[in-house]
Length: 104
Image (cartoon, rainbow, N blue to C red; front, side, top):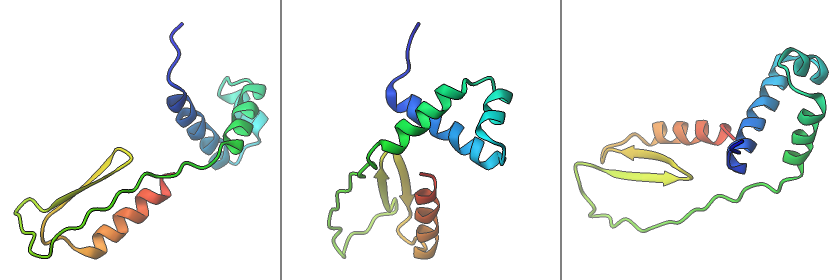
């Protein structure tokens, strides 16, 4: 049987844990309704709680003030890309970054 990479399984279980929490049901009831062993669910919940938080890789580059292009710039962080036109709205970028932060 093929196993998915650990990052994929962790993301899957983080999603399941969030779904259970949002459901308002007890862990036991939610697991029963979703055909998940209670012991497996609690083991993953414990494992993910003990995991140290990921430190995002951030690398900055200086963009000269005379930088001008029709394409604008592209920002990529942890596999998420944001393409900005040279006349982008800073408030929209701020809102976008706030949304992305809350996805974790």
